[in-house]
Amino acid sequence: MEIFGIGVLSWLTFLPIVGMLAVLMIPKGNEAIVKWTALGITGLQLILAVVVYLNFDPSLSGINNVDSMQFVEKAKWIDVSANSWVGRIQIEYFLGIDGLSFPMVILTALICFIAVIASWNIPKALKGYMAMLLLLDTGMMGVFVALDFFLFYVFWEVMLLPMYFLIGIWGGPRREYAAIKFFLYTLFGSVLMLLAMIALYFSVTVPDAVTGERIHTFNMLAMMDPANYDPNSLLAGMGTTFRSLAYLGLFIGFAIKVPIFPFHTWLPDAHVEAPTAISVILAGVLLKMGTYGLLRVSFPMFPDIATAWVVPLGILAFINIVYGALCAMAQKDFKKLIAYSSVSHMGIVLLGMAAMNTQGMMGAVFQMFNHGTITAMLFLIVGVVYDRAHTRDLDAFGGLAITMPKYTGIMTVAFFAALGLPGLSGFISEAFSFLGAFQVDELRVITIASTLGIVLTAAYMLWTLQRVFLGKPNEKWAGMPDINGRELSALVPLAIIVLVLGIYPSLLLNYMSTSLNHLIDIVRTGGQGMAMLP
Image (cartoon, rainbow, N blue to C red; front, side):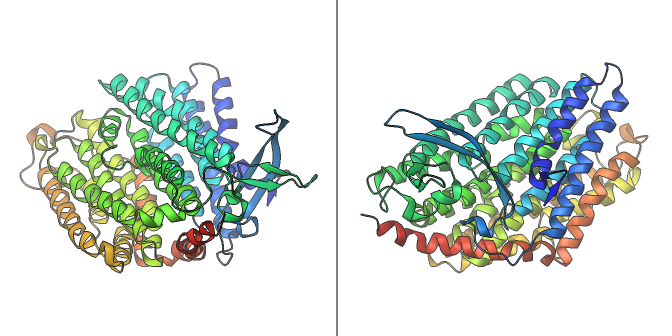
């Protein structure tokens, strides 16, 4: 599918770069033009994402061969001859999506469009802010569509720079500390990922299309096929020490982004100091890059290690769910409470992934999408009240339901979706994740214990609702204006998605089921293929 001779995935990925350049060329002082340009570019990207949704074929199966990928774009990018030890270096511009990446593409386009609306009142250096936001958009989208590991890594690193500046320049009082902490954590994970990527590159060979000679490759699909591993390479065979180390390096790199305990400490600081729109992107999309990486890279490329480490992953999921919920309950800062709730809800994704069955995997990926929309609503809601009161202290409010009824109504939808109320999207994904994990004997006790997180989530969400919106109105906020049209335009579409997917989840589930079932087959049987290597 091409537009003006360029593939739709390239448009989705690089359209924000075009917008960034356009924003930078707008003369200083034309802030309205800057805003509408950024909004128009992300709006076009969202329209393209809808076009992809309408043309996506959910019946295509497989995640490890090019025939099962859709909207594929493939071209030589780097092709040079090196020394005799390294051999020929060939890196491809290789894009494509399947049922695993498809929901994340839709989510990224949606959240970035909402983030521009939420950024309308940025007080300083608006041109630079919008340019960084659009560059961040390209980095995130590229991660979800790249099928060459080198290209994947480039997009992964591109995301780091704009997020550092968006927090460090436009953030709160402790923005420098939060930005540096985020940068160092992510960079550490990226180094481990780079080492694992290089090890995979020198372990996998494929025949050259022209000469037929075996050459090393960064092709992620080739890395999923046991037949492509050099029998003499470090990562050949099943359950070897080097395979375990490579898996561990990738796992830590992705775990930092999720974030998984104990790599989570950067998240509350980054959320609290980041502007509202950047918190929306951080929780809505960036956290999903970690779990997506585990599903796209770690599981299918290291099925033997992934299946062996099911119980440790389940334990980490339990810690995330319960520890995150307990930390959220202890917070007095509205934004930090939502940040810790993200740690808890991403634990549910991990639990579904650990199940490695149909219900668990579908619940995990569906929870990734649902958490993106729900947590975006929650951070936008915090931003609305902070813009008016300039405080996030939960004990400073009370009775806002009387002074801000529209705001309270939209907030109620978000809060009840976050605690998993039936009829809203969060319930479906959480139920699938727990059902899938409960079917696995090794995870049954962990799953039962993890349900404590559901109770704790209900407790801190309802307690927050009581402190902020119910009771006697605080006279200090008696004249606080209700939510305005711009803020509603960001929140209402998310609320509609939460309601629609809660009632009819097949609108998304049907598009991911075939690919996820194939991923499960690869993880369960892939280790046997690795064992057959000499």
